Structure formats: C-alpha cells, structure tokens
Image (cartoon, rainbow over all chains, first blue to last red; front, side):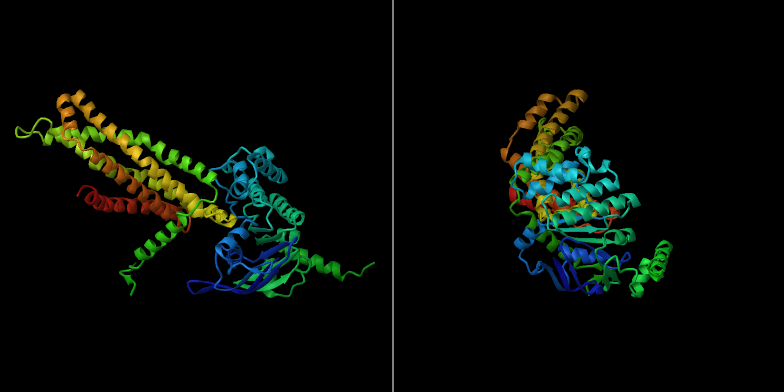
Length: 259
Length: 255
C-alpha cells in the first residue's frame, strides 16, 4: 500500500500540489484523474521520487520514501515499474533487450534465464513475435505493451502508469487498460494510473482520486462517480455529451421501480 | 542584483556547480561491471572508430596544406632546405593532431553525445532508468567519457600519420619541395616528448568533449528545440574549454 500525507509542491512560487492525502491499496487499480495541467503528473513524480515534495510524506508500506537513504531508495525502486506517457523505450535496443534491461541490471539469473523471463513477459502482453524489432518499428499500442512487459520484468510490487492511453485509439486503450488491471490483480501489485480518459475510469477505476488545480477534490470508485456532488468533478466528467447521456440513463434506471 | 542587461550573472557559477555535482554521480562504481564493459566497448566504437574516417580525411588535407603554406611562405635563401619538413612536423605534432583535431571532433562527437542524451531526457528514457534504480548519469556518461578518452590518443596517432602522408603526397604530386628534404626536415631534431605531449593533451580534450557535451544533454529541459540548443551550446563550450585547456597544458607540458 502507498499512502500520501499532506503533499505540497511548488515551482517558482506557484503552488502545484496542495495538501494531497490519499491511500492506494494493493491488488487494485488506483486512478488519479483530472484535466490536463491539474497536477497529476507532478503528483506521480513525487510518489515515485523523480521530484521531492516541499512538504509531506510518501509512505510505501509505512516506510517514508523521502527520508530513506540512497541505498534504500535504490532497493525500493527495483520494486517499482513505470509506464510512461510516451512509453520511454530505449530506442538503441531491440524489444527483447528493452525487456531484458532491468534483468541485466539487477537480476543474478543466467543469460538463458533472463531471456526466458523477458520472453515470458513479452508473451504476457502478446508481443512474442516482435522481439527482434526496434521500438521505432512498433505502433503506439505495441510500444505501451512493451513498456508494460519491461515494467513487470522484475516482478515489481508497485506499478505506475502515466497516461497509458494517450495517443491510442479506444480499442487499443481498452486492451492496455485490461492488461494493466489483469496484471495488477495477478501479481497483487499496487497500481497507480494517471488518466483523463473516462473510458479507463469507468472500466478499471476501482479506487479514484480527482485532482483539480493541485487539490484533491474527490475520492471514490467508478460505481459512485456518477453520484458525486462535487461541482469540479461533474464539470470534468460531463464535459462530454456522451457521458451526460450515460448519467441521465443511469438516473433514469435508478428511478424506475424495481419489478 | 543577479541580472545585468537581462543576463543572469550567477548562471555560469550555478552551471559549473551542477556540472561537478553530475560528475560526482558519473564517477561512481558501475552497478554491473558486465553491462558497463559492454557499454564501454560500444562507445569506443561509436565515438572513436566511427571518427577514424573523418580524422584521416581532414588530416591528409591539413598536412598537405600546412606543407604547402610552409613551402610558399617560409622558404627563402636564408632558411635551410629542411625547414619546411621541420615546421610541418612541429605544427602537426604539437597543435594540429591534438588541439585542432579535438576542436573538429567537438563538433562531431560533442553534438552527437549532447543530442543523444538530450533526446533520452525529453523522451523520458532517463526518467525510466531512474525509476528502475539505475544511476542514469553513471550508466550513460561514464562509458562515453572513458571510451572517448581511450580512443582519442589513437585518433591523434592516426591524425599524425595521415598529416605526414598528406604532406608527402603534395610533395610528390606538386613537386613544390623535394621529398628527401621534407623527409630530412621531418626527422630533424625529433623530440619524442612532443608526441607524448600531444597524446596527453588529447586525453584531457577527450574528457572535456565527452563530459561537457553529456552535461548539456543530460540537463535538457523542454523538447526538440532544447535538444538542438544543448547541442550547439555543448559545441561552443567544448571549443572554448579546449582552447583554454590547450593554453594551460601547453605551458605545463612544454614550458
């Protein structure tokens, strides 16, 4: 479990995160939602340690990440996997080499075992036929799948995904969402996903926090998001006419007497 | 107070501090020696071996031009016949093969390093390394620095020989100087230390090229325009630093 306690972050005097408190449970897909520029990515960078909060605590199973020594942080980072918005695959390496990279750096396995593990991870994301390709030869969706395979290569406890669906079509987005959800449940990981994709929210949002202008405005699940009374959240989710209609149908169904 | 005509006067000091802080991370024990050695050999090939062609080409022409200039401008009834060979050798050994060659390579290799690492920064590949717990500065920069420092003296030796070959080529083709006079001049009062001084200087210049370019690439903020700017800044900074280091090293080694 990951816990955030009163996280504050400013850049050049401009407050980007204000008193963020949250809990992200293991075995669940935890979503951080909010519109672009709301502070989601900064929050995630604070959680994974790419940025340090001005104030507050980031607790990994009760251990404060900020106060850890360099060695402890390094050890904890080997338990993390991250999928970046642009996949961030190493373009000088093939797909197989990308997935093998964390194993090369931190595993004591033999070369044969490392290859076997990397192939297993690639098989898990249905990309065994692309092992010799370079990242540049892959589509956006395939790159994200390679990133997922690389992220799970070391059997991490924590999985972080920054806008995993950005730039993908709805069908591929669904595949990526399902993959992240299945892997989270399968390995009992703590997954945190940054997104502004409402399909992801309604599909895999087992625990959701909504951020607006650097403040946590709402916390809940996909089942109660339509009943939320938070004005900012409603503005965000019902920006699309389609979702407004979905809500109307949802309310209509609830008003219908049960037979 | 810190700004003069819109320029931040403390920026160079801050940059220097950042550079040394980064070097502190770079010169740490590699996480996996096997991975480091693989990267080290790869960088020797990509930064050093791939530069042999351009080094040979430029050196042949520069050797030819230096010999021609000496023949046209230094030769007089008052000068011994071997003066052309002697001055050509001294220029090639002392300045061209190390300093000028490194200035040229600062453009090729320096821009390459800055843009490669800069692109890795803007595409979050460096963040990906950090998240995995890899010391990204050491993993990316150390093999480049050591690889170029290993290969640069070899490039300098190639440059010296190619320059001498260029001088003789002009001599044979144009007949501007008699080859035996040139040969005598090339061997006249040869001091082996000049070769060593050149090689020593080249190792320092290689360190400057690789580390300064990597610094600019590693600290890129923004997108492709920022990568382009980092490339340009790295070439300019490397050139200035090489010239300054040349001044200091020449005094230390030859003075």
